[in-house]
Length: 318
Length: 311
Image (tube, rainbow over all chains, first blue to last red; front, side):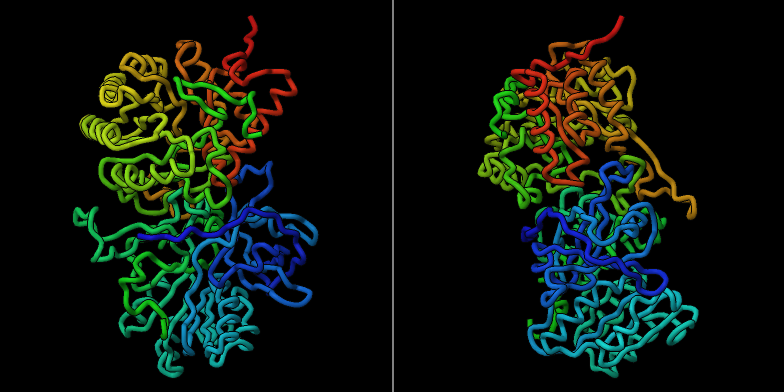
């Protein structure tokens, strides 16, 4: 498989603002011209903690928003909830604190080459990269519809912005505390039919991504998912963040009847063709303890090495 | 700085521009980190272990963070020795990197066949490290490195195949006495020793009452294991003062590297810290140079094993 080298940089950025979205989510806007001007939707940044921390690994975050113009130009925004020591530390940062960043990392979402009806499906904090994606899709003249879901109203990420961004939007909560009672997948098929959806972009927990991928694959609708995998390095060296993908039938050489191949979420993803992921072979499909889960980027999209073989992955026009 | 005379050293006949290498499994074959800096500036790259045929690796989760360290069970996912010979090695040579191959297997024959392939096809490799911290399928999955006999068989077989390439045995700290395995490796022809591989560990998610790793047990690395590495290097260097040692285990700073060097390591390798900062080995080398200047040491080689013991 060919993996293009990712042009990443290790750099520092100054925190411009720290704010909150609702009760659960923290937001940091970081000034970083080198990363900010090159990041694409679905890519992520990997932030180092303090040198004296017993928590040695960087914490990855997908880019929630990017600002190209005006007073906020050259900044990136990340959102997160506090899950462990790393996110606790980041939640304590304020304006003028300086962070060490690596990014932009990973391969982002592929945008349609001609005007298309795009449906974005986000669960919990996993919705984060879809906001950046929605901005870019709208800038390119695509239609954006949005299904945003969470366990309860407090865990919905910025539903007000969803209303502003989307032509058609649906809000779901497991407990019915806001929007419709149920899961994003309950609203999926109806929304796809009503909006004449041509491509679906999704990010959230594995079971949600598996279900969305199945619905799309059954109907030959391209489905791009951004996965959240535990990663040690975030730049391709450690081989811990792998996703099981169906092995391309055309490739030969390391056969032995193997049916899947492990692709790195950090460099070959985090955006993958949802229809090519072997969801029941993904160990991280089961929830990991909260303090460990902060080692996975909130919503990294995967574009797998098998893209070329999965004909219905590419959005319309590609 | 990268051409500092104080840092030049020779280990098992290999001339190194710096005694700071990067450890196997933490740097791939250099491609990923090469987007951050010129990898020829490193003392050397000990590549990710290669096996006779491609290995798919274990299922996920493969990693969890632990206090001042991490636990991993990756299962040596790699594309095999042929891919190394035709793809990775020529690329590394073009980049002017100092390359240390790393080989792994589940039987003595697999190790020897990889070594045969390297002798026949690998050009431009400075040395080979033998990763004997693998389960031995012919001995109820015991690690080769936990048996003096198995260690001697593997190292002897590899050395027979690679007579002209320095061979380093990478020892596991999970066995005592370590000097027994070191002696077996040296007697079988090892030109040097790499100390240490990861410590076996386990971490449990108490909410789910399940292991945090799909592989249940994993290898512990990072600063948490550094004192174990310093002790292991000191113990083995004291027993075999003339055997070259590449010290590794939890090095994140020049001070950490100095501990291993003073304990008896001729060179060091940065491992887990590469995950945090791909340029870390260069930072460590720079710090070593500064230390030599500050302590008026002409060459870092003068420091090897120079820790003073009281009484």
